[in-house]
Image (cartoon, rainbow, N blue to C red; front, side, top):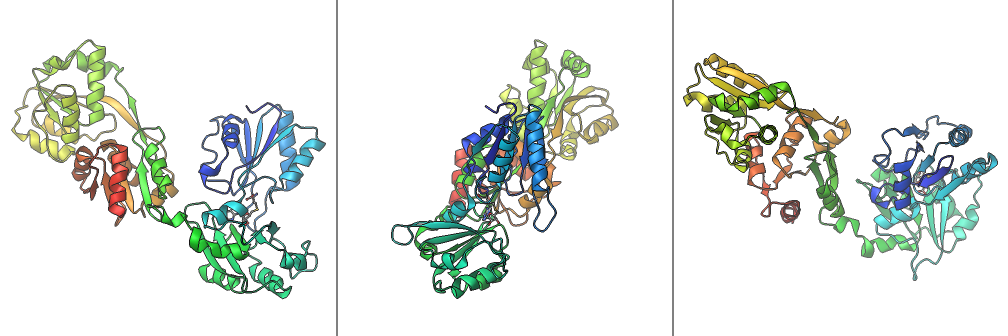
Length: 499
Ligand code: SAH
């Protein structure tokens, strides 16, 4: 797939990860080394191998960058070392991407290369704004132009008079900084100042913005809206087609920021569905459960299970793992026959029911203090009690039971390991319109990642009563609850709420 000693000049598209080509994803997943630029889609590198070298060689606006010669050297040296190398660029590598220069340098060094075209911003950003760059009635030609050079300067490489006369759409890259000079020069050379014009900022990305004006008014409109790079500028009658073609903002969840917290480490289908409906989806990472049921303490506890007068379980995960450990020891629910069984809340009680055990004690709120209070009536003095829980749990429950005279054993059934939350994603989540919860564990995960906070004013969407109960136990209420308790039902409920 990605061959040793070959450099792949790969276009990553304009920003929307969905516009990356199948070939680009395949190469990113296989490459030994990836040299990438600034304007590549978010998460474009997510599929890279864990041991791949990821090297940023991009340029911040106005900042020094890795010089082009140096990039050539780095590509050549890696290929000569026998690595498969992806040179990843925004948009298309051969459209204002210096891909041509890199290809020539590689040929000069006798390094094999392959070119993987990408969706270029000059076509995609207008398309996402509802502007076709050609149209049978309006434009039979389109020119891609760099706005990098100030037309007021003498050494300009562009023939501005020819561009003014060009019979078709002008699509300009890198033109925001010089916009007043560009529009002034085009109009000065005879292009109609009333011709429709548009600018699209961050095209195809969440938060895309645009303005539609005329050649004469675009500079002011862009300044008023404070559009910044990266933006595409477009001059031509097709800009006026936006009124009849705009589609992005008509999608049902357009402009809504929706948080999806993953229950497990796997990718989330719900996130993809919501994104396809136009939502600005913020995905928060999962918390992984690392079972510890092979430990000696768990084995001993399971061995002695029938001897406990009280067995306390503090999460659904704990319940499932305890039964797994029991099964491994050749036991079943009858091992709990002698014991009072206490669950920390309804979710944990529901998990017990799945294993055929109806909890004797269940407080309404899933916190240790509530369980302590609920256990008030259970005589524990002088009796053996087992608290089976997460390794990192607080000691409120065992301490309280010991104070009442119980002989308490505590075992850790698992440890929760949090994937490092991306601070930007957490911040984005805190300004969400909707937070979705597809299971009780997504509630726990979300609150763990945000430090117990919910975004102000966000509507909370729950997949069903159990998840809503978990939210309630944590002191929050689900404004929207799915009627069908599956991910599709949750999306349906959210859509109904938006309408
Ligand atoms: N090779 C790239 C272009 C690189 S030049 C391509 O084919 O798209 C960088 C310029 O591309 C930016 O200054 C801007 O004009 C444009 N650009 C890149 N991504 C963009 C985006 N998402 N929205 C609007 N313009 C973008």
